Image 1 (spheres, helix red, strand yellow):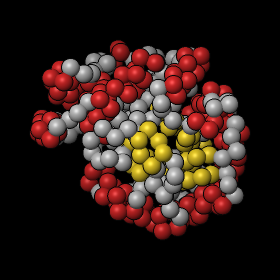
Image 2 (cartoon, one colour):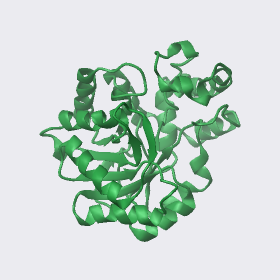
Image 3 (cartoon, helix red, strand yellow):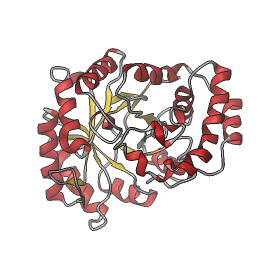
Image 4 (cartoon, one colour):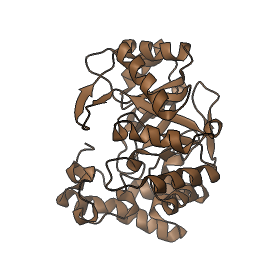
Length: 318
């Protein structure tokens, strides 16, 4: 299986299994900075170079963590971060902002947090409904001209918005949730990305951990875990959605690999350019995820997965 891809409209070569860093600072229960830094360093040692963060994760703490971990190693990593989700001093969510003056301000803060002179890939995290996409991308393109950003990307937009954005400035990557229980991008976005030369980056490729089989009930979550408020993790939804895990388990057993490896290999088998950014704080999970490169899913396997998976996921994504 091909392990790297060159991001759209760029010269940036990245691992197709990168590392999503959000959980190292917030959202998924307790975390330990030293453990996270050890995991980030181990990822580098294992050849991972694609790391994803955002200014709103830990309201700046996650960017600062990566800046600390990669101090003196900046030339070895491709850093992706995001703007648009505003948070207050106590972490409260204050809405979205896509105004060019705000984008410039957010970029400056992210550069400072990351301890870098330029961001490799700068994503609009979500679109501010009050600002047209052309104005947002126009503001982002100014940062490219100034050398503060190398490439730009979007997250969670539809096909029409993606086309409009790309007409203003080349879009390098589209980051959207995609996994065996979130397959909406297949209907249109994959085709548009291929047509326009945009790399698709799948976030939550393991269904926020659910597809690994690690979650059997709500009692498996720590207090404060944001999944406790997610519609897919109600008691009723968990019972129904475990049918996805049962199918993955069957394939995993036949291949003598883990469920996480099957879920990731399935994503990478969609096409040769797609990338995924599973998140973890633990070295053993990181190593497990990277083992997906060694899993070969035949046409027969893919057909069996397609045929056996439930027709619908219980619960909305958010």
